[in-house]
Length: 79
Length: 217
Image (tube, rainbow over all chains, first blue to last red; front, top):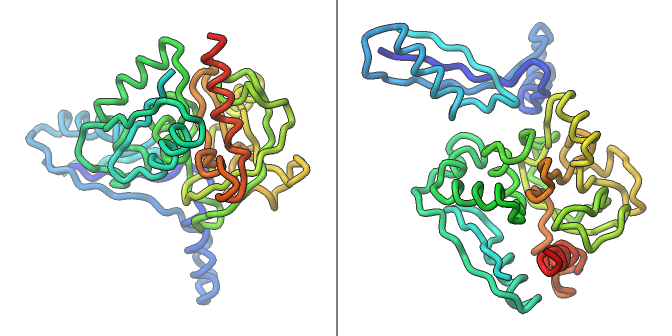
């Protein structure tokens, strides 16, 4: 199965990269883009065909390596 | 007394630290190779280095009360390894900052600041892109209450001012220690400030402190 892991800064953490992109978009006239938060995206190919197992494995890997729980949270999609 | 300088693939200033210990202070130092593949920078600075075999030894040494100093990359690794609280974000203005900063010594009861007086101002260089110290508000409160903030970015007179905070660090934090106070992380580079030729000698105080601390241990 494939797991997609989206890692983003927690809402309470300032994102200087997202802010810079938002400022650039505003200067290009995209005032309707109110805010931008930048994150990281991972695709994990997993040697399991059971969705629950895949999710648990992806979560373990995200907790341990892909995300830093001090500043980041993550969301997992399995397909 | 012997200094062990942990070398990771791609970590920098290990030779500067070796030079400072050996040639400036005339003390014994050796490199400690981390013994693993180069994965630095793959995800977050320090995120891969913490899995190197040597980190379990560094952790064991610290748990026995051994003094551990993480400078710059080293600070980032200690944070990722959970040996110090908090995390590093990209610098507030997204710029790599390489310049001298002023630091106020907040507490002197660590092995790396015991030769200083509280309030002592040090002028030491930084060189980093991810030195914007972050911790959740409750963690920051605990750090302050436990007197774990060891150095703060200030103006040349030791006053807090946002313009003198080079990276946007919370509470102007440049250095923290663990609860046992034997593990210290700092973003500025004392090893680059040990000789007049390099523009200043304020970094010596960090090395003099650990020499003093080990002598009375």
